[in-house]
Length: 356
Image (cartoon, rainbow, N blue to C red; front, side):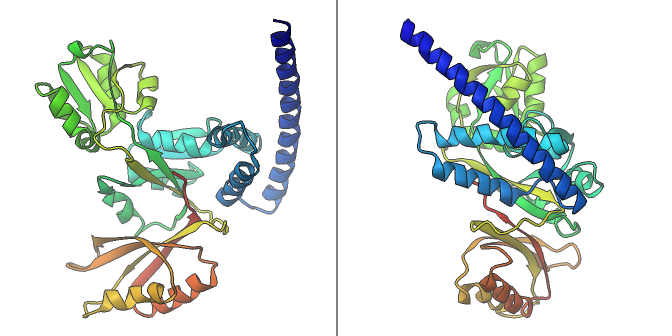
């Protein structure tokens, strides 16, 4: 017991030191904010934040876990930024969705979260300065792309400033936590599809209804004891539900990728991605001629998607992600060669790669 008391006193002493250092750090942050405001520079810089995480995790000798270290410093950075200016973040709502969870993961709890009713509303919030940044879903590793997000970039001048990966874990939840109380199950179509095998095996006679979001499903379940929802742990907390079964998704390693949009152009971090959109003429080999610019430069293409053009019938626009930053010399040269082989193209952003 004496040793226990000694250790507790030692922990208290360390906590006091941490508190003192946090306040010293905050004083530095305030000074940085003044300099940035005078220079009209953005307060939140994704590349700087990633550099902080990378340096700390590289220098961490343990035993404090590196992933927990990231979470701790996310909140330190979020709280510090709020001393300069509270970051306003618009996300595809309602509260309790996976997009809400992604926004908190990136910007921390000290940011002001603004729930938007649609993807266009997120873009509008940022364009009209009601929010500093927006967070929107772009693709799921099982269900594919969110086409509405791709279409929005054709008419918007906003940049992609970063990306966030969230591992999708679906829970079945209701007011009581008892499976026998469930008469109906609600969720988003993607969530239902990702849990189809489990539902067929374990809830074969229960009616399943599609709603616009997992959060809406949780809201319904919170008001009706005979209803259950499939959704995230965030929805469980927000709507005060109890878990009936945890992790009912049919496949593990299910990730959703989200994009951060804003009017900032992040600097190079050394682990970056560049996204572009383009269209080609109706000629044999035109797509090949455009894309070979990246192949010849040894640039890795990580994604390509096509969408019907809204400007001309039976013409398509293509969305491509490549490894590297627009400031890289070989990316510059590839883009120059690429531009001569397409009828239209636009750089959507160069930004730090997200971490899974």
